[in-house]
Length: 97
Image (cartoon, rainbow, N blue to C red):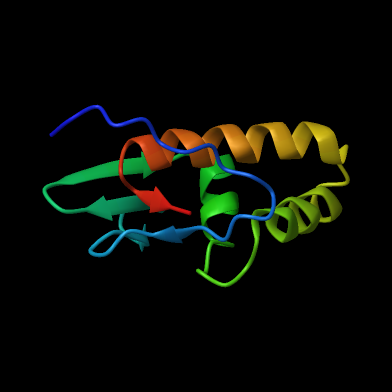
């Protein structure tokens, strides 16, 4: 596996989970888990809120708008956090734009 740079994620990007990767709720532990081939990540509550909106059709800007409204938070703050998390998960080959 090479360290190929991941292109930056923009607000007009439409992100989706890579094939074989998904967000799943673990009812026993009451937590969200990102299932990927041969690995898993526990999604903290903030990441889970973001990832539950990733559907492969919704642009990142729409995800940001929904979260800013839902939590009555400043849009620039939400945008920074969402873009940073998506970029991190794209680098880990969980999401793609």
